[in-house]
Image (cartoon, rainbow, N blue to C red):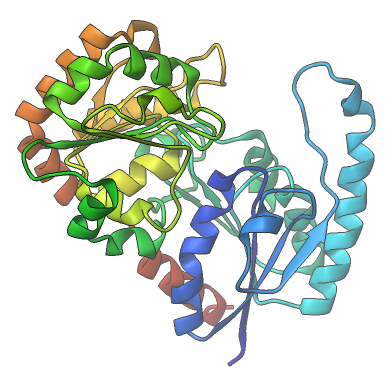
Length: 353
């Protein structure tokens, strides 16, 4: 039986990377894979190994913006384009990871009678997925609490890129030129960095590097050349190939609490301190994500509003002292990296018609 799946999702890396994490397992299981995304979105750059079909995409904003008057026409155009693509490809299944580009794809699949499976990464469903749920045959969620919002959903967890699980600690140590004398702390502020986290880290750099060897992913444009000579401190705008080795090297992690990041730490059993993006700069989804992981015993939490170097050092001391408890909780988790389960579910889904 020929098996063809269309993946869709875009707008941010968080809507794309879980799809990419599935690719190798889908291919091994005999699936033909295609991808539909926004031709202007980040997915057009990230999707390399399967056929990519770009469509027009608008954004459904819940606040006043002049583009609210023009973007509906982009959405309509995207619906026509995705309908044509799906009619040509005739896949067995569409898998949607969210982002506004997915709404016309899901609607087109429904019009064509193609089954749709939706996956929601965050604790509270985004607007695009909420609009799409009525047209899906199945909905998978990442957090147990999300079932309160979508009672018909199934708890699945979040797929993690397989390459991140293949890091080498000693290769990471050589890359950073660190020794075995002190624990290694990896600090991640998100793909574009965090001004707040960067400022606090640099204000307390002496205290931090007295206790830890620090890998600081500070975001594009945030490198400070005067800090290149600080002992026990390595700063990078971001890492690609080397990230897996630096994760393997890290004894603890400080991070925002986007769903992809925290499920990577869960899969790697890395003790971590979460500093969620505040509601001043987001809809609060990172706070909800973090609270769920704290409740499960996987994560320590430091609210951004309370962040200063004294509280950061204190929180890291507690995390280091209790690290074995966190590791044990993560090792016992039932929602770690469900790639094989997801692919097997795709197979069962189409075999049952």
